[in-house]
Length: 256
Image 1 (cartoon, rainbow, N blue to C red):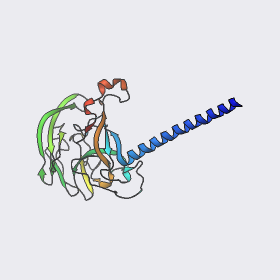
Image 2 (tube, rainbow, N blue to C red):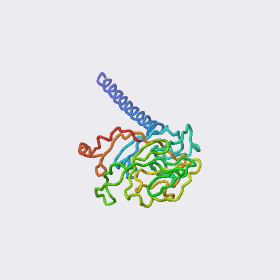
Image 3 (cartoon, rainbow, N blue to C red):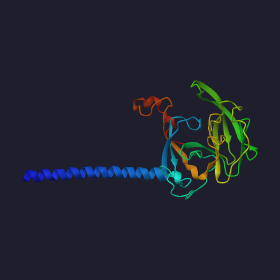
Image 4 (cartoon, helix red, strand yellow):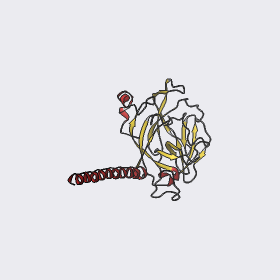
């Protein structure tokens, strides 16, 4: 009988340990879901539209609370309510993730260039906002790859927006690329004009068939920090290659 009692106690103890493990896992998943939904959401960069600011292979956190919350703040974008709650308008120069208004589901990341009511135009590669050319200063060329993945150097500039935000842009096709001379865009109320820093390799608000004007409701979050970065020709899961493929100098850098 004593042996039977000891065996029974061991079984109860084992079942209790398994249940505790399950509870810990469920609690961890719930905490992760809350953090992802209301605080920070991770994204990775699959394209070069924001080179030189963001590179293919960068992994970053966006702050969900910066612009408040809309249906697009939540997984699967449930129609819980219209508009935004606790909302704040994106600032000119922010790099932000948004759902493209063409399908309201695909995540894009671009820089906020035009605010509601602004008039935006590209003339000979120079950005114009409300009829004034944005200050642009030539700096050292940027080393990147061309459309055939061959190393190349392209013109790079420091661009200073009207609110003082300075950031780098590149012109892979010089100042006469397809999107370097555009019509005049007038940003509608409640919408924003988004552009990539890689001006000749970015599908953005200049192309109405792909992006167009972005409603405030479609914003997901503001890009804040790069938490991991790996060479675009490498695989993140190959940890044994990390000493050579991880861009260590980009980890934990602020996004501006």
